[in-house]
Amino acid sequence: MAILGGTGYGAGELLRLLTQHPDVDIVSVQSSSQSGNSVSSVHPNLHGILDARFEAEISFEKLRSYDQAFVFSALPHGVSAETLIPLVEKLETEPHIKLIDLSGEFRLQDENLRTEFYPTFKEKGLSFLKFVHGVSELFTGEIRSARLVANPGCFALTSILALAPFCKNSNAEHIAVDGKSGTSGAGRAPNSFFHHPEAHANTRAYKILEHRHEPEIRQALGSAPSLSFVPHVIPASRGIFITAHVLLGEELAKNLDQQTLDAWYRNFYADAPFVRLREESPQIANVIGSNFCDIHVVLRGRVLVAVSASDNLIKGMAGTAIQNMNLMAGIDQTTGLLSPGLRVI
Image (cartoon, rainbow, N blue to C red; front, top):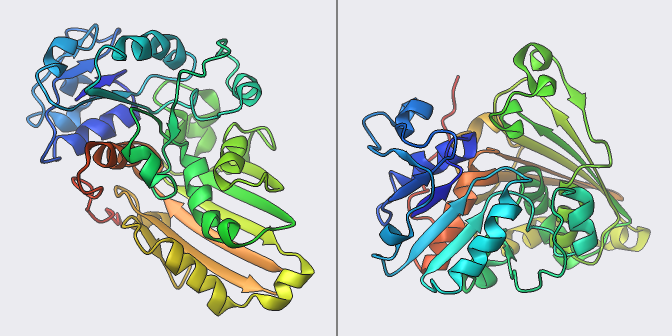
Protein backbone atom coordinates (compact mmCIF):
# COMPACT_ATOMS: atom_id res chain seq x y z
CA MET A 1 0.00 0.00 0.00
CA ALA A 2 1.21 3.52 -0.84
CA ILE A 3 -0.02 7.02 -0.01
CA LEU A 4 0.32 10.09 -2.20
CA GLY A 5 0.36 13.27 -0.15
CA GLY A 6 1.17 11.83 3.24
CA THR A 7 1.26 14.91 5.47
CA GLY A 8 -2.39 15.94 5.93
CA TYR A 9 -4.86 15.04 8.65
CA GLY A 10 -6.61 12.49 6.44
CA ALA A 11 -3.31 10.86 5.52
CA GLY A 12 -2.36 10.73 9.20
CA GLU A 13 -5.57 8.89 10.03
CA LEU A 14 -5.07 6.55 7.07
CA LEU A 15 -1.63 5.67 8.35
CA ARG A 16 -2.82 5.24 11.94
CA LEU A 17 -5.59 2.86 10.89
CA LEU A 18 -3.52 0.98 8.33
CA THR A 19 -0.76 0.23 10.84
CA GLN A 20 -3.42 -1.81 12.70
CA HIS A 21 -4.81 -3.54 9.60
CA PRO A 22 -3.86 -7.24 9.59
CA ASP A 23 -3.62 -7.53 5.80
CA VAL A 24 -1.73 -4.34 4.93
CA ASP A 25 1.94 -3.49 4.47
CA ILE A 26 2.69 0.23 4.18
CA VAL A 27 5.55 0.32 1.69
CA SER A 28 5.63 3.91 0.42
CA VAL A 29 4.49 7.30 1.77
CA GLN A 30 5.00 10.21 -0.62
CA SER A 31 5.43 13.89 0.19
CA SER A 32 7.25 16.41 -1.97
CA SER A 33 7.76 18.84 0.91
CA GLN A 34 8.89 16.26 3.50
CA SER A 35 10.91 13.86 1.36
CA GLY A 36 13.60 12.18 3.44
CA ASN A 37 12.04 13.08 6.78
CA SER A 38 10.50 10.47 9.05
CA VAL A 39 6.74 10.01 8.85
CA SER A 40 6.56 10.36 12.64
CA SER A 41 8.09 13.86 12.42
CA VAL A 42 4.81 14.99 10.86
CA HIS A 43 2.54 12.45 12.57
CA PRO A 44 4.15 12.10 16.03
CA ASN A 45 1.41 9.74 17.26
CA LEU A 46 3.00 7.13 14.95
CA HIS A 47 6.40 7.32 16.69
CA GLY A 48 7.45 3.78 17.50
CA ILE A 49 4.57 2.41 15.43
CA LEU A 50 5.58 3.19 11.85
CA ASP A 51 9.27 3.27 10.96
CA ALA A 52 9.16 4.92 7.53
CA ARG A 53 10.36 8.02 5.73
CA PHE A 54 8.60 10.19 3.21
CA GLU A 55 9.65 9.66 -0.39
CA ALA A 56 9.62 12.13 -3.27
CA GLU A 57 7.63 9.63 -5.36
CA ILE A 58 5.73 6.48 -4.52
CA SER A 59 7.69 3.31 -5.15
CA PHE A 60 6.06 1.19 -7.85
CA GLU A 61 8.92 -1.27 -7.56
CA LYS A 62 7.82 -2.09 -4.01
CA LEU A 63 4.15 -2.31 -5.03
CA ARG A 64 4.96 -4.77 -7.82
CA SER A 65 6.02 -7.39 -5.27
CA TYR A 66 2.39 -7.81 -4.13
CA ASP A 67 -0.47 -9.65 -5.83
CA GLN A 68 -2.77 -6.78 -4.89
CA ALA A 69 -1.62 -3.23 -4.25
CA PHE A 70 -3.37 0.04 -3.52
CA VAL A 71 -2.48 3.68 -3.90
CA PHE A 72 -4.38 6.16 -1.72
CA SER A 73 -4.23 9.73 -2.95
CA ALA A 74 -4.60 12.22 -0.10
CA LEU A 75 -3.53 15.14 -2.26
CA PRO A 76 -5.55 18.37 -1.97
CA HIS A 77 -8.05 19.64 -4.52
CA GLY A 78 -6.24 21.28 -7.41
CA VAL A 79 -3.19 19.06 -7.10
CA SER A 80 -4.95 15.72 -7.18
CA ALA A 81 -6.26 15.78 -10.75
CA GLU A 82 -3.03 16.93 -12.40
CA THR A 83 -1.15 14.18 -10.55
CA LEU A 84 -3.68 11.38 -10.94
CA ILE A 85 -4.51 11.72 -14.64
CA PRO A 86 -1.01 10.58 -15.74
CA LEU A 87 -0.94 8.10 -12.86
CA VAL A 88 -4.17 6.46 -14.05
CA GLU A 89 -2.65 6.12 -17.53
CA LYS A 90 0.42 4.49 -15.95
CA LEU A 91 -1.78 2.07 -14.02
CA GLU A 92 -3.05 0.67 -17.31
CA THR A 93 0.20 -1.29 -17.37
CA GLU A 94 -0.03 -2.16 -13.65
CA PRO A 95 -3.29 -4.14 -13.52
CA HIS A 96 -2.81 -5.34 -9.94
CA ILE A 97 -2.63 -1.76 -8.57
CA LYS A 98 -5.87 0.00 -7.63
CA LEU A 99 -6.42 3.66 -6.77
CA ILE A 100 -8.59 5.37 -4.15
CA ASP A 101 -8.71 9.17 -4.38
CA LEU A 102 -9.66 11.14 -1.27
CA SER A 103 -9.94 14.50 -3.04
CA GLY A 104 -13.15 15.66 -4.66
CA GLU A 105 -12.10 16.10 -8.26
CA PHE A 106 -13.37 12.76 -9.55
CA ARG A 107 -16.57 12.47 -7.48
CA LEU A 108 -18.93 14.31 -9.81
CA GLN A 109 -19.77 12.45 -13.00
CA ASP A 110 -21.21 15.47 -14.79
CA GLU A 111 -18.30 17.31 -16.41
CA ASN A 112 -19.97 20.73 -16.21
CA LEU A 113 -20.64 20.33 -12.50
CA ARG A 114 -17.12 19.03 -11.97
CA THR A 115 -15.49 22.08 -13.52
CA GLU A 116 -17.96 24.43 -11.79
CA PHE A 117 -17.34 23.12 -8.28
CA TYR A 118 -13.70 22.14 -8.82
CA PRO A 119 -12.50 25.01 -11.04
CA THR A 120 -8.88 23.87 -10.93
CA PHE A 121 -9.99 20.74 -12.82
CA LYS A 122 -9.41 21.81 -16.41
CA GLU A 123 -9.60 18.48 -18.19
CA LYS A 124 -12.61 17.56 -20.32
CA GLY A 125 -13.62 14.35 -22.03
CA LEU A 126 -12.06 12.06 -19.47
CA SER A 127 -14.48 9.23 -20.10
CA PHE A 128 -11.65 6.73 -19.62
CA LEU A 129 -11.49 7.71 -15.94
CA LYS A 130 -14.14 5.34 -14.63
CA PHE A 131 -14.09 6.37 -10.99
CA VAL A 132 -16.80 4.77 -8.87
CA HIS A 133 -18.35 7.06 -6.24
CA GLY A 134 -17.14 5.37 -3.06
CA VAL A 135 -20.21 5.40 -0.82
CA SER A 136 -19.59 1.91 0.55
CA GLU A 137 -23.16 1.31 1.70
CA LEU A 138 -24.80 2.35 -1.59
CA PHE A 139 -22.42 1.15 -4.29
CA THR A 140 -20.97 -1.99 -2.70
CA GLY A 141 -21.02 -4.13 -5.86
CA GLU A 142 -19.55 -1.43 -8.08
CA ILE A 143 -16.76 -0.77 -5.58
CA ARG A 144 -15.90 -4.47 -5.33
CA SER A 145 -15.19 -4.63 -9.06
CA ALA A 146 -13.61 -1.16 -9.41
CA ARG A 147 -9.99 -0.21 -9.99
CA LEU A 148 -10.62 3.52 -9.46
CA VAL A 149 -12.70 4.84 -6.57
CA ALA A 150 -13.46 8.46 -5.67
CA ASN A 151 -13.96 8.63 -1.93
CA PRO A 152 -17.01 10.72 -0.95
CA GLY A 153 -16.83 14.04 0.87
CA CYS A 154 -17.48 14.05 4.62
CA PHE A 155 -20.57 16.30 4.55
CA ALA A 156 -21.86 14.49 1.50
CA LEU A 157 -21.43 10.98 2.90
CA THR A 158 -23.07 11.73 6.24
CA SER A 159 -25.99 13.43 4.44
CA ILE A 160 -26.34 10.63 1.87
CA LEU A 161 -26.48 7.96 4.56
CA ALA A 162 -29.14 9.92 6.46
CA LEU A 163 -31.38 10.23 3.39
CA ALA A 164 -30.74 7.22 1.12
CA PRO A 165 -33.33 4.82 2.60
CA PHE A 166 -36.07 7.42 2.25
CA CYS A 167 -35.04 8.45 -1.27
CA LYS A 168 -34.92 4.81 -2.41
CA ASN A 169 -38.52 4.29 -1.32
CA SER A 170 -40.15 7.63 -2.09
CA ASN A 171 -39.80 11.24 -3.24
CA ALA A 172 -39.85 14.51 -1.36
CA GLU A 173 -41.10 17.94 -2.36
CA HIS A 174 -37.91 19.39 -0.93
CA ILE A 175 -34.97 18.37 1.28
CA ALA A 176 -33.09 20.99 3.31
CA VAL A 177 -29.80 19.76 4.77
CA ASP A 178 -28.14 21.57 7.68
CA GLY A 179 -24.54 20.41 8.11
CA LYS A 180 -22.11 21.15 10.93
CA SER A 181 -18.41 20.28 10.89
CA GLY A 182 -15.39 20.59 13.11
CA THR A 183 -12.45 22.68 11.96
CA SER A 184 -10.29 19.73 10.86
CA GLY A 185 -12.53 19.48 7.79
CA ALA A 186 -10.58 22.40 6.33
CA GLY A 187 -7.36 20.40 6.30
CA ARG A 188 -3.93 21.08 7.76
CA ALA A 189 -3.02 24.19 5.78
CA PRO A 190 -3.62 27.43 7.73
CA ASN A 191 -6.98 29.03 7.01
CA SER A 192 -8.14 32.17 8.82
CA PHE A 193 -11.80 31.15 8.63
CA PHE A 194 -11.09 27.94 10.58
CA HIS A 195 -8.34 29.45 12.79
CA HIS A 196 -8.92 28.51 16.44
CA PRO A 197 -9.43 32.10 17.75
CA GLU A 198 -12.05 32.63 15.03
CA ALA A 199 -13.81 29.30 15.49
CA HIS A 200 -13.70 28.99 19.29
CA ALA A 201 -17.05 29.71 20.99
CA ASN A 202 -18.47 30.55 17.58
CA THR A 203 -20.71 29.01 14.91
CA ARG A 204 -21.30 30.31 11.41
CA ALA A 205 -22.52 29.21 8.02
CA TYR A 206 -20.37 29.36 4.89
CA LYS A 207 -20.72 28.72 1.15
CA ILE A 208 -24.49 28.94 1.59
CA LEU A 209 -26.17 27.09 -1.31
CA GLU A 210 -22.77 27.00 -3.04
CA HIS A 211 -20.94 24.10 -1.38
CA ARG A 212 -19.40 21.44 -3.64
CA HIS A 213 -20.95 18.62 -1.60
CA GLU A 214 -24.50 19.62 -2.59
CA PRO A 215 -24.32 18.23 -6.16
CA GLU A 216 -22.52 15.17 -4.78
CA ILE A 217 -25.44 14.48 -2.44
CA ARG A 218 -27.90 14.88 -5.31
CA GLN A 219 -25.90 12.57 -7.54
CA ALA A 220 -25.81 9.76 -4.98
CA LEU A 221 -29.47 10.03 -4.03
CA GLY A 222 -30.58 9.99 -7.68
CA SER A 223 -33.75 11.27 -9.32
CA ALA A 224 -32.44 14.86 -9.04
CA PRO A 225 -34.10 15.56 -5.68
CA SER A 226 -34.99 19.13 -4.84
CA LEU A 227 -32.31 19.73 -2.25
CA SER A 228 -30.51 22.61 -0.58
CA PHE A 229 -27.44 22.37 1.62
CA VAL A 230 -25.97 24.81 4.13
CA PRO A 231 -22.71 23.92 5.93
CA HIS A 232 -21.59 25.40 9.26
CA VAL A 233 -18.33 25.32 11.17
CA ILE A 234 -18.63 24.58 14.89
CA PRO A 235 -16.11 25.03 17.72
CA ALA A 236 -14.86 21.45 17.68
CA SER A 237 -11.83 19.84 16.06
CA ARG A 238 -13.63 16.98 14.35
CA GLY A 239 -17.05 15.52 13.68
CA ILE A 240 -19.96 15.95 11.27
CA PHE A 241 -23.55 16.50 12.39
CA ILE A 242 -26.35 16.53 9.82
CA THR A 243 -29.99 17.53 10.28
CA ALA A 244 -32.01 16.94 7.11
CA HIS A 245 -35.56 18.31 6.89
CA VAL A 246 -37.67 16.47 4.33
CA LEU A 247 -40.98 17.94 3.16
CA LEU A 248 -43.35 15.19 2.05
CA GLY A 249 -46.16 15.47 -0.47
CA GLU A 250 -49.64 15.41 1.00
CA GLU A 251 -50.52 11.98 -0.39
CA LEU A 252 -47.31 10.40 0.91
CA ALA A 253 -47.82 11.96 4.34
CA LYS A 254 -51.24 10.33 4.59
CA ASN A 255 -49.82 6.86 3.93
CA LEU A 256 -46.45 6.93 5.68
CA ASP A 257 -46.09 6.26 9.40
CA GLN A 258 -43.10 5.98 11.73
CA GLN A 259 -43.22 2.19 11.77
CA THR A 260 -42.99 1.99 7.98
CA LEU A 261 -40.23 4.60 7.91
CA ASP A 262 -38.21 2.70 10.51
CA ALA A 263 -38.61 -0.50 8.47
CA TRP A 264 -37.28 1.27 5.36
CA TYR A 265 -34.12 2.21 7.25
CA ARG A 266 -33.66 -1.19 8.93
CA ASN A 267 -34.03 -3.03 5.62
CA PHE A 268 -31.78 -0.66 3.71
CA TYR A 269 -28.94 -0.95 6.24
CA ALA A 270 -29.42 -4.61 7.19
CA ASP A 271 -25.99 -5.46 5.69
CA ALA A 272 -24.24 -2.18 6.54
CA PRO A 273 -21.98 -2.86 9.54
CA PHE A 274 -20.95 0.77 10.02
CA VAL A 275 -24.42 2.33 10.08
CA ARG A 276 -26.10 2.32 13.48
CA LEU A 277 -29.77 3.23 13.70
CA ARG A 278 -30.45 4.99 16.99
CA GLU A 279 -33.67 5.53 18.94
CA GLU A 280 -32.57 9.01 19.93
CA SER A 281 -30.47 11.78 18.43
CA PRO A 282 -26.91 10.74 17.55
CA GLN A 283 -24.01 12.52 19.22
CA ILE A 284 -20.68 13.43 17.67
CA ALA A 285 -18.96 12.26 20.87
CA ASN A 286 -20.12 8.68 20.26
CA VAL A 287 -18.58 8.35 16.80
CA ILE A 288 -15.29 10.29 17.06
CA GLY A 289 -12.38 7.99 16.26
CA SER A 290 -14.64 5.37 14.67
CA ASN A 291 -15.93 4.41 11.24
CA PHE A 292 -19.56 4.46 12.39
CA CYS A 293 -22.34 6.73 11.20
CA ASP A 294 -25.24 7.00 13.67
CA ILE A 295 -28.70 7.86 12.29
CA HIS A 296 -32.10 8.73 13.81
CA VAL A 297 -35.28 9.51 11.86
CA VAL A 298 -38.54 11.08 13.05
CA LEU A 299 -41.80 11.65 11.17
CA ARG A 300 -44.54 14.17 11.97
CA GLY A 301 -47.21 14.90 9.40
CA ARG A 302 -45.57 16.18 6.22
CA VAL A 303 -42.17 16.65 7.87
CA LEU A 304 -39.48 13.99 8.21
CA VAL A 305 -36.27 14.80 10.05
CA ALA A 306 -33.20 12.60 9.59
CA VAL A 307 -30.25 13.24 11.92
CA SER A 308 -26.81 11.68 11.45
CA ALA A 309 -23.35 11.97 12.98
CA SER A 310 -19.91 10.75 11.92
CA ASP A 311 -16.22 11.52 12.31
CA ASN A 312 -15.21 13.63 9.31
CA LEU A 313 -11.66 12.23 9.31
CA ILE A 314 -12.67 8.56 9.70
CA LYS A 315 -16.09 7.67 8.26
CA GLY A 316 -15.94 10.90 6.27
CA MET A 317 -12.48 10.17 4.89
CA ALA A 318 -9.84 7.62 5.95
CA GLY A 319 -12.15 4.96 7.36
CA THR A 320 -14.39 4.86 4.30
CA ALA A 321 -11.27 4.73 2.09
CA ILE A 322 -10.11 1.62 3.97
CA GLN A 323 -13.62 0.17 3.90
CA ASN A 324 -13.55 0.61 0.11
CA MET A 325 -10.08 -0.94 -0.08
CA ASN A 326 -11.38 -3.98 1.81
CA LEU A 327 -14.27 -4.34 -0.65
CA MET A 328 -11.94 -3.97 -3.64
CA ALA A 329 -9.53 -6.52 -2.16
CA GLY A 330 -12.30 -9.06 -1.62
CA ILE A 331 -11.99 -9.22 2.16
CA ASP A 332 -14.50 -8.45 4.91
CA GLN A 333 -15.25 -4.73 4.77
CA THR A 334 -14.90 -4.38 8.55
CA THR A 335 -11.28 -5.60 8.62
CA GLY A 336 -9.11 -3.20 10.59
CA LEU A 337 -12.02 -0.87 11.30
CA LEU A 338 -14.24 -2.40 13.97
CA SER A 339 -13.41 -0.21 16.93
CA PRO A 340 -15.78 1.99 18.99
CA GLY A 341 -15.69 5.74 19.23
CA LEU A 342 -13.34 7.37 21.71
CA ARG A 343 -16.13 8.99 23.76
CA VAL A 344 -13.78 11.62 25.18
CA ILE A 345 -15.36 13.19 28.27
